[in-house]
Amino acid sequence: MRKPNLALFASHNGSNVQAILDACREGRLDVHVCAVISNNSGSYALERARQAGIRAYHLSSVAYPDPVELDRAILGTLIATHADWIFLAGYMKKLGPATLAHYRGKVVNTHPSLLPKFGGQGMYGHHVHTAVLQAGEPVTGVTVHLVEEAYDEGPIVAQSEVPVLPGDTVETLGARVQERERELVVETLRRLCRGE
Image (cartoon, rainbow, N blue to C red):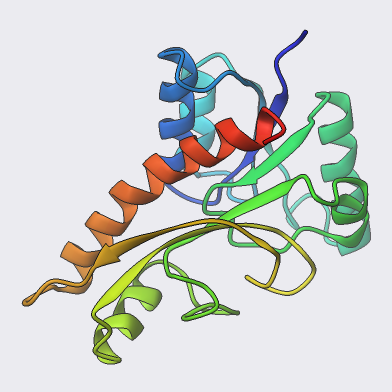
């Protein structure tokens, strides 16, 4: 039986992309990464893909100003690379309706809080950690969920708590959340791709 094909989407550094590539190389995740797609031509995630010998694609409104055409280009790339699953590893754009419809139930996202808390448009990265600290939360964490049309509202697949420590800053809290996120992403993708 062939390994499931996983397409990764990322907008910036791609630390979760690297965590997945490392897990595949080390035999901890039995999937084939078939493509890395970014809306940002300067994304380091694309460079990570190239270094690993994986097809890297810059697909954005620069080449496809019409959102319908961009959606078609993304879907066409996913079909051409035989993607079975999509993982949004820090992708700062919404997927279009055609792509979401074709891959319904097969698009997975990670979010650096315990959804539904601190989710929604504009809540990403340091914005989330700032809000958690300002709210005086004793605990935060990571959520892996299926993607639907609205930001951060799809069914939750997995969550993991991360304590907020006295004296935490946005940077220290963010680093601990990101470390746990990389572990949870690999664990959850392993289960999903096995059909669990």
